[in-house]
Image 1 (tube, rainbow, N blue to C red):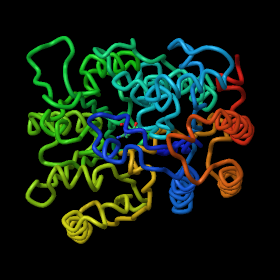
Image 2: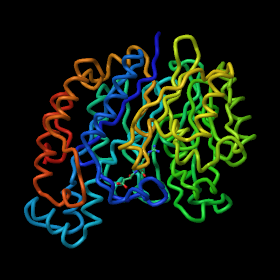
Image 3: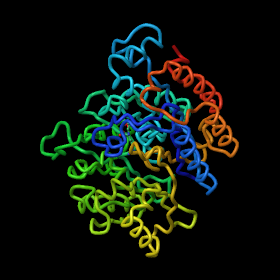
Image 4: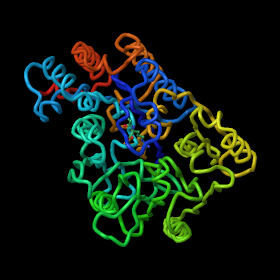
Length: 448
Ligand code: SUG
C-alpha cells in the first residue's frame, strides 16, 4: 500500500504579534514590541503550503485558535462582558492580555506528537496534544488543539487521540519539535527518536543553567507509552544543555530527520556516538540503513544555526530517493550557512537541493519552516479517512487566501490587542474558517 508523509501547516491567526513571550527563544525576545503584519504572515505561510503542494507533496492545513482567549482571562479573575474582560486586562495586566492574544498555535510542530500506525501496538495513528507547559501563552493551546485534531482525524478506527500530559513542568512536553521518526518507507515500522532537555526525576542528567529545558525525559517516555511503541522502536537522546543556553529551545532548531537521514549540528546532543549507534542498529532491525549528516561547528556555529534556522528546515523525500531541504530566507543571508549549503548539495550526498522561502513574519518570533508544520505519516487508507476539508488543493488555497485578505489586519501593535473589536473580528473570521475547512464547532465561542 502507498504511504505518505503529510505536512499539516499551521495557518497563522489574525492576532499574530511580537509579544516577547518566550524567554530562551532569541528571536521572540529580540523582536518584542515591534509591530507585526498578520496578513503578510498568513500569506507567507499559505505560499509555502501551495508551493509544496505544487511540487507534488501531500499538504494539509491546521486551523489557528480563538484569540484573545477571553475564557483564559476569566480563569485569571477578569470579569464582566467580553469587552470588559479585555479592557480590564489591558489596564491592570497588559502582559497577560498579550499572552492571551498570542497566535503561537501557528507553530504546529508543537501541537502534538504523532506516531504512525506501523509503529503502534493497536495499529492506529496516535496523537498526544502537547501541554506546552513551559510558557503560559502556549499552555492554553492544547484544549482547542485537541478539538481541532479530533475534527481533522475523526475516524476512530484509524486515529487515536490522547489528552495532553499533566500540566506541570515535570511533564513539560513540546510535541513533535522534539520528536523525529526514521524509517525506510513511511508505511513501514520505524524508529521514533525522542529528544529531551532534562530529566525531572533523575538528578544524574545535566540541565541548562540559563534558559529552561522545555521537554523532559519523563514526558517523552509517557508519550511513547501512550502510543504503544515498542522498546526496539524508540531511541531517547538528551539535548546538549549548553546549546539550550545559546537559544536552542527545541531540538528542531539544531537537527532534522527524515526517512533514513538525520541532519544535525555537531553540538546538538550529549553522547552523540552512542545515540547514533543505537539509531543505526534499531533502524537496521526494521530493514533501514541509517545515515547521518553532521554539520561541524567549524563550518556553522551554534549561533549561526540559531540565527539562520538552518536546521529548522523541512527535509523532504523526492520520488528518486534524494532529498530536498526547505529553508528560510535567513539561511541565504548568512554567508557561512549559505556556503555550507552550496557545498552540501554539490557533494553528491543525499540532500541535493535547497529551496528558500520568505517566512520573515514567523521567523521574527522564532518559527521557521519546520515549526510551521506537523508531520503525519499515513497510508492510503488513513489518508482517505482524514477530513478532506483540511487537505490543501488549488481551490482551498484560493479560498484561504481570499479569507485572509478579507479578515486580516496588516499591522498589529500592543494597542490593537486592547481593542475589543479585534475579538469580534477574529470570531467572525474563525466562524467562516470552520466552514471552509469543514471542522464543525471547535472554538470556545462556538461551543459554550
Ligand atoms: O514556543 N514562539 C514560539 C516559537 C515556536 C517554534 N517552534 C518550534 N521550534 N518547533 C515558542 O517559543 C513567541 C511568541 C511571542 O513572543 O510573541 C513564541 O511563542
